[in-house]
Structures are given as structure tokens and as C-alpha cells.
Image (cartoon, rainbow, N blue to C red; front, top):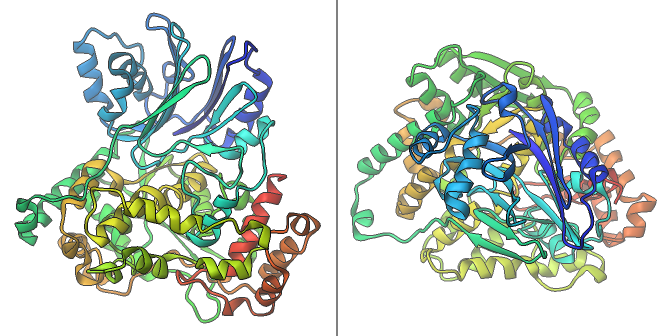
Length: 590
């Protein structure tokens, strides 16, 4: 897990080393173990290293192979790198390191743009071919590893975070109206390739991009998950699905133990993280470290789930660390957590993961986390509402959107209302072939869009702010492909995630499973009061905010007067959503 950046020019200029160094400085928290650059005229690559596999200097980056004529920067982990190494060695390739980085480099030479199809893991990378002058950019199947791009004035820059690109300068920082609509409606998610800024785009998931020396580009989607089922899937009994799922889960969790350093688990006390702990214990993992966090209650809402995380830690005898965060510490840490966001993310989980990662990084370098299970196994409350729906688009929008378009017109200033971009985006996804069932349409959309740009991005940004690598076994692509083959009903059973809960009951205490669904609660940011209300008010009434003019003044006045009365359908604070965007923009000087 690391951070990388680079620049390639198309107009004869030499790539800017000064710009590259500014990007690498912004990426420093992602890679505290080393820094390196390579400069070849019109191409410059830079890397910040977090050493996880092959801790020696042989695994340092940028990695160059003079014999093959390739330069590479890579972020992530390829869990099947040992198997791929043996296959490449059989084809005659010679290796100088034990790193998965070198496997990516050799794989690109051997298999070109088909190489990502061979990788089990999370990754983003850039390969420069010296002979052709081409640059290749690739991103993993679920966008677990980020990759941002800006293409202006005869050059392309790319980096692991959006703020790193800002540090290099020369970017159009105007707000993208369609992205703003997504942020305010689609639960603060801006669908790729857009970001909140007009001048920055992100590479979509499961995509490899070819960049020619003249600047022309071509994208290829190398993986898709299909929800179409054959008769054997429709007729398969639940117990058989459970056995198949359990086998797949065991492989997914075991794969993510590949490291030359200890691996821990972020233990929320929910079904997903508890199941990971149970599977590792079942596999004989000893001395497993687990970590939990909690916050002060507010407005009568509890701020921790320690009762369940403690139960799991005791049951499996883990080396458990739990951290309680008082509101005063939460307030103090908020600015740094916002600064760590690659894009503005409204979920309260951000501050939770930020503070938990700070604690965890003192003990381990790698953790497994339970993100993705709800999107893959239908754990959210809106999926049952789509079962048998005659209006999937309308039912999904009513259950998931923070605001419909008409309400948006009463919240945003008129100049930002340029069409219902959020609904159009969802309609386009629902119209695609491969997911005929309404529930499957929502699962595919959430897995491809919401997952990458909310929970997965949140975990990446907040863990990497402390040089911590997070791995997500529920996003093993073979596991996701298996889940997609399951009929929707088997996932919707038992209040959602039915088949996963059935498997979990074999392994973890039933008390963890047979309870109301929990989440990462931070009540102080839901029911803004005192210093948190003052922070929001100061941001939204500042000179910068007034000049930006995103929101209607009467709407802001209503939010300030009664923040607890303005809660979105997904239990979020409308005031915090508005304030977070403004705080992020101001933090990055926009």
C-alpha cells in the first residue's frame, strides 16, 4: 500500500520534477517508508512506499527493468503474486526481488492490457513503455485503490489522491454542477469519471487506459459482474449456496493474510468484521489483534457497539484494543480527517476510521475490514423495497436519495440547477443488460458506484492517512461473482444478508447476528450542537462560502435553527452534508 504520482507531456516539454515533488510531498502519509522518482524527459514517475511485501530495497519504487524497457509505479497488493511469479518464471522471466510490484511489471510485459484480469487483489498502477512512449493506467475491479487524473495544457498528471494533483497546480478548480448534484442527492457520492472539481477526473473501476505519445487515450473495461443466472442457480438449495459461500469466504480471508508484517482486524462488532475474525481463528491464526472505537452518545443515541466487539474478542481470545473518543477529541481531530479526504465524504464513519487508524497504526501495518458485505449481500434497507418492483428507478430513488430534484431546487442556489444528473445516472445503470431483477439492478449499481466512492474510499483515505493498509475480503472478485449468481431472495432473507448470516451462525456467537443492524455511530455529527454547530455555521457563513454561493440562504437559516430536524432518509444530517463540502473546499484552498 503506497501512493504514487506522475506526469507525461505531449507537446515536447520536459515533465516537471518540481510538480512531481509537490505531489509526492502531499502523498507522504500514504508511504512513510521511502520515496523515489524516475525522470525520463517527457515522463516523470514518483512513489511513496509503505513496505508490506519484500521489505528490502529490491522492492522500492519506481521500479524499472532496463531489459524489458519498463518503468512502473504501483499501489496495492496482489494476493496471488507467488502463483503468477511461478507462471512467469516458467515463461523465462527472471526476478530480482520478492515483491508483488515486480510481478505486476513482468505481467504487463507478458500479457499487456490483459494483465489486470490475472490479478487477485487491490491495485492501481502506471506503466511507462520506453520503446513506444505509451503510458498505461489501471485500476482494480472495485476501485479499492484510487487513481485521479488531470489532463490540461498538453500534459497529463495522475496521482493516488486528488489533493496531490492540487498541490502540483494548474487545475481548473471550478465546481462541476453535475457532481454537486450527485453529492447532494446520491448520498454524497460523485460517480466516476467525475469529481467535485471540473479539472479532475478519476479512472473508473475495472478499467485500463492506454495513453499514446500524442495524448490520445483509449479505455477498456476488463471485468464485469453478471447477475444473470442459469437454471442450476435458480434451483440450487440454500444449504448448497451456504457451503459454496463458506469455501469462498475462507479463501478470500486467507488471501488477505499475505504479508511480511502482522495483519490485524478492524472489529466493529457487526456480522461482517466478526465473521472475518472467526474465519481467521478457525484457520488457526494466533495472537490476532483486533481494534474497535466508540464515541459519546448524543440526543439519546448510543455512540459505540463495544458490547458486541468485546463479546467477539473474548470468544476468539484476540489481543483486543478498544478506543473511546470523547467529543472534545472528536472536535479537535475533525479538521485533519477532512483534510485526509481525497474527495468530500459526508459519512460519519470517516472520523471514526481516521481516529481508529491512528490507534491501529501504532500496533500493525495491515488490517482486514468488513466493507462491502452490505452491497454484495443485500444488507441495506432499500433492497427489500425493490423486490418485485414495477418502478425500480423510482423506488430506489425514494429509498436512497438524500433529496429529490424538486427538493434540491429549494436547497441549492438557482445557478447550480442544471438538470437531474443523479437520476439520469441511475437510470442509465438500471437500463444496462445483465441485471434483469430490480434488486440486482440496485446491487450492481451500489457495488460499481456507491461502494467505490463511499465506504471503500473512506477506508482507503482514513487508513492511509496513518500509513496503514486495509484489505477488504468481501470484495474478493470471486466472492462477488458467486454472490451475484445467488437469487435475490436468498440474500434478502432474514432482514438482509440472509445467506451470509446463515454461514456466520456456524462460526460467530449468535448474539452478534440476531440483533438490529448497527453502523459506525458518531451521534455528535448527526445532531449538531455546541461547538460542532458553530463549526458548521462558521464555514457556511464565511466570506468564501458566500462568494461560492452553493446554497439558498433561507435553507441554511432553517438548518441553523433546528439541525436535528433535518435528517436525510439514510439518517444523515443535512447541515453536516452542506458544511462538510464547504469545509473540504476551504481546507484545500478552493
